[in-house]
Length: 388
Image: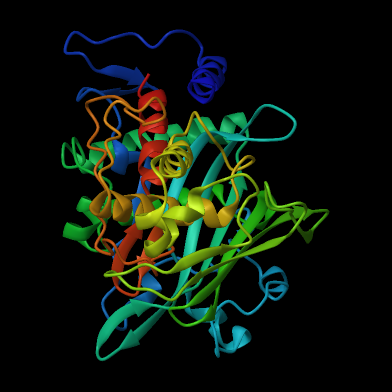
């Protein structure tokens, strides 16, 4: 609830006055009428379709640049550890492409307050067996927006909504339905790329997070760095006693999970859900604590990036879904279950399904879409707030 209140407060400060209702129930936002009830999940979070072989350039790369400079300059990229096992990081630089984007009016900052942001996720795009797929590594880029830039972004959201018509209304978060139909050279993708190029670049890049593949299908490591005086500095991971990287290990598969966090947060029982044998044998009280932990991670008002470690955030949704299939777990009335506005379809419909190796929060595992319920729920909060 606190996060929602902060979202609404920040938006009220941006506006010149209350947003007047229209006779048909829509709103006026940044001078553009939204007559369909407002923004939906796919209007504030965008998972771009993978390009056809040979068309990788239709996605933005790290050298793509607007008035704020390249999205991610080479000198900063070279600071990161190698992100894909057995791959030369320098040679991979041209293959990284932006595959998803999100807008956030209230990313938490320390010790208090909000940062207005556009966030991009990039993965290496490769062609295998005449089909486009991705390598199992991720770079997450955070761009801070001024009040004026955020208002400009809201104008772009209204234009994108106009281009989408009603196609995004009531749809679950997934590969964007308009870009999937039009392709990456269509009007919608072109307008989205124009917004990103206008508002994102080296000048307002503030943070970089990564997921690196240490051993194929077995081991991954997460970390984050803040951009300070033009240099990247490792940021301690929440709940992990100043550690700057965290591992996730998985020896199981979709039939039988056998994973662990390295390390897990002290006093948190989420790790029970990562091991099939432990999850099946644990007592009801411990299982309930583990389920509660997962639900709180999925709930935007119960946790945030300053209070949850990277690994837990990325594994919680798939681990909880697996636990529901193996144990009798009813969370329908749980106090920490996110409900949200009923006009949003909050189902998790990604193609990766129950594969425990799909560590992605909003991207691709190979050629399969893969994201978390946390991303869906945050998108609902942002869409509802920006629709006011």
